Length: 249
Image 1 (tube, one colour):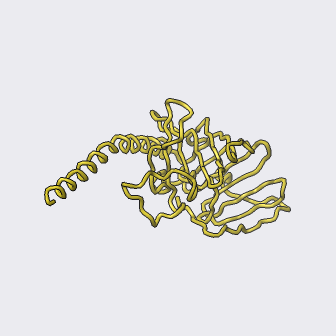
Image 2 (image 1 turned 120 degrees about the vertical axis):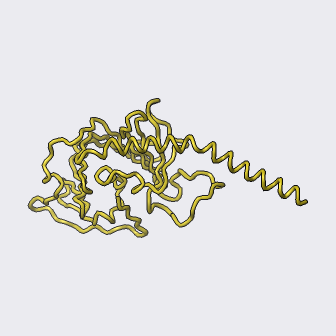
Image 3 (image 1 turned 60 degrees about the vertical axis):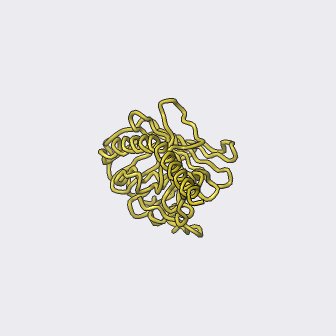
């Protein structure tokens, strides 16, 4: 009996060592890609990109929007939607503003309490440390890149879902939206360029952000990151949903 128990413990140890060694290449590759991503965008104080946003429900595209996004350190970003209608999402470092000119109303929410799905992208306006936004980052299991030159990484957003339960090495990787948002970054492997962000939410809802034409330190006035309500526009303080989990990039 004593010998069989010893053999059992040794087999468990060998199995654990094999699993650990097999996991190291993917971890190393992931760290390398994250390092490239951070290095590519960290040096610029201001970033600008053209974006295409798609809102998908149960596999069907229900809305497509496009415009230009700006990111400025520290903690500011501006999304100018140009089609199919004009509206603005702006974070000035203290507040998040949602403005649709056609409605003549702007909603204001404290930036640290915003649960908007663009919040993970605030890392581009911060210290550009992925670990500040992602509690865990690893190769995506089921998401396929749009190009062979790209890789897709899964980001477990800090504060999303329950972080109290730590995933053990025996648990299958959780990369679904069953318990909260699932966020994926598509990145050019060689350069670290961010080309797509995918946010999957419970109920079959997916939001996609495609980025092109990245510009580093374009000539942009700081006034672009301060919201001033036009005459006749009402400012409404937004109410956060119950169970809000703020992300502080």
